[in-house]
Amino acid sequence: MAVKTNEGSCCFRYRVAPKVKSMNSDRELWAELGMDVELHDKLMQTIDSSFREQVLAQTNRPSTMAYFDEAVHAAHGERVREIIAHREAGGKFVGTFCIFVPDELILALGGLPLALCGGTSFTEPYAERLMPRDICPLIKSTLGLAFSKTCPYAPLEDLSVGETTCDAKKKVWDFLAPRSHFHVMEVPQKKQPRDQRLWHEEVLALKDRLEAVTGRTLDREGLAAGIRLMNRKRRALQALNDFRKADRPPLSGLDALLVSQIALIDDVTRFCERCEALNEELAERVRQGIGVAALNAPRLMLSGCPSVLGNWKLHSVIESSGGLIVCDESCTGTRYYSHLVDETPTDLDGQIAALADRYLQIDCACFSPNTERLENVVALAREYRVSGVVHYVLQYCHGYNIEAVGLTSVLKKAGFRSLKINTDYSSEDTQQLKTRVEAFFEVHG
Image (cartoon, rainbow, N blue to C red):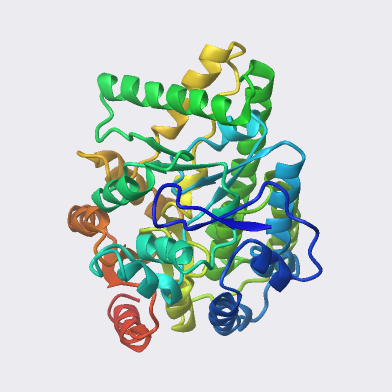
């Protein structure tokens, strides 16, 4: 049964007993977890409404997208039951907030990793009761889910892992770190040899923390299996996004985004199987010349901040205005799947070093200088043959907002036009964004 606790931060005032009985309905499950069921109903209605209006309203979708549609609705139901079953079988549940956290380590030690970030404006007011209004909507949405007791994952976490990729997150972790089941990874701000050593030490520290939480000891066979599985996921996502380079892409940017969002919360093996099945259908659609947009539709890259589950607004605005997003340069895009972990080391130290090296290749805006990302964006723009780049900046995300200035200049020199969109999760500016996007198409085509 659900139990109250005063342990740690006010962010998480409800925890759950180790055993949760089998539930007859999702609402019974949420009640047993100590959630605000009525408020959660309203949250799900809000998400379902935007999902139907923005994602399901599309036409000519691949039939295998049905699984990913269902996964959205299963996220707070069947997926939660899977987590409960995993814990009752002796496994641990580890919540993460960033793609810098190596899922391979969690998997190798019998853990179940899952991204906890929120992408809905519905829960932001609950975070604003304690936190400032003028911080990143992703952070407010995520905290708001916990504050309002509408997150089914918070009561089940055996460990949460944060990271220092922005100032807002670092200060938020000050609220959460006193909890016994919270861990913070220090992400260096440069990539010099001493920064590489620091990051390697942080990966080792996470390993030690995970071993303490799971009661297991990391071995090379387990880590090799975790690396192979995550590399399989990345290869599946790479293959999917290669289809978006076609003259007539067989998949919309909205659907590609949905697949990436589900990748962050789904069972890894099952996701790989479903994504590979989708890739087979996409290959057939390419052979048949089936595209999702007009031949003359502007090909766009969306670059910058991530679009986590629940947030489809900007993708919908762009594609409902006649454009087609063929590349996502974000943490729910290329930064998530671009690099594989080297599988050749056979000793544990070598495996951990390879793991650390792979994750430090992520070109987040937290790094300075970040010429690596500027070069990568231009290379992607050429590879996907885009006609323009849309800089997606969540309000108060200073890293990507400032970096867009230099990136705009670099893109212009390379022959690419760009448009900066600074927005949040609300729908209030949708028509204004649509007007700006349509004007961008008219001027630059």
